[in-house]
Length: 399
Image (cartoon, rainbow, N blue to C red; front, side):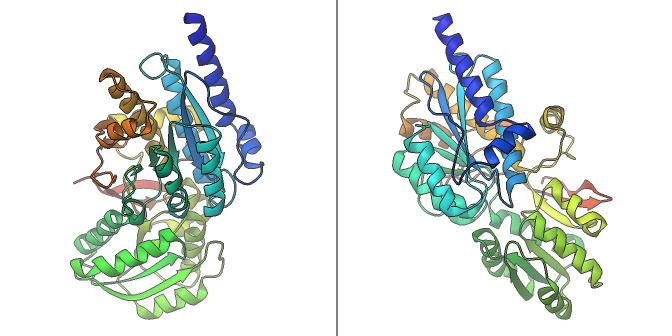
């Protein structure tokens, strides 16, 4: 039995290292593959087969690599301690969805049909999760997204999907409440990406602004990959709001900040979606003063936050966003659910059974205490951070 378990552990850890390597070379081998491809890895008998779906190529590859790093970090820790319940190794199978919904569907089909995964972590983009989550639902496989914040993800009646990230509505209320309380704001403009994530943020801003006595004086939309923001910024400048909400990703937000500096637009800016180490690398001093709503930041002195930060920095050299600790916690939430199944004499390989245990999660991890409501949404307090001289500073702590 010991020899059999040793073989299973070795096989699973080998596959994990291949499927989800953290080094630049292993990233390149995954990112350079074809659409919706994965390395040659499939289910391992006797192991818990865990799928990871995220963008390892394309414009969101940095965020995807961060998710992959943190997921692998948790898996390696668990396997080094003997596996789930001390006996069940985790076999991690990672697939690249390029951040493209159609590719994400194909990638998820492979995880479910070929790799026979027991659970899935991902996707990163809301549009990808919305596209692929019906596949896991049909197969009765629990899916935890540590990154997709669109409220539609958990408004669909799909009880196999969980958001281990604050919804856009929670973030928007955090943003507006902070600006009213700290700046006495009365009006705002919103500049958002034309994705499910961005348009979802715009719709929520339109809906909840009255709750804060705020007037939306302008709304502007852009496409992923745009580089010239002179027209929308000109309109925002003319509208003269008390502050600007960004609802998009780091690449475009960094360029927007540079162009605001160029055009002499000096307005408080705050939002969600761009909390990436690449923001300061791309934006330079133009992003100083920009604020971000987030559920996690390494500036938080909490012991578990600092423990995660130290481990991640030692392994990968730092530079991560909130998707990293949320991906890390997702692995441990699944581990905890499996162990509670076993303790109750239940079959964790039955997706419906495992899902019921995930639904009743109470896990204290790197991102604090995680519980899910009846829709699969996490319930957590949020921070507001500001960028000062390239560093993150907490300007609003947890309530």
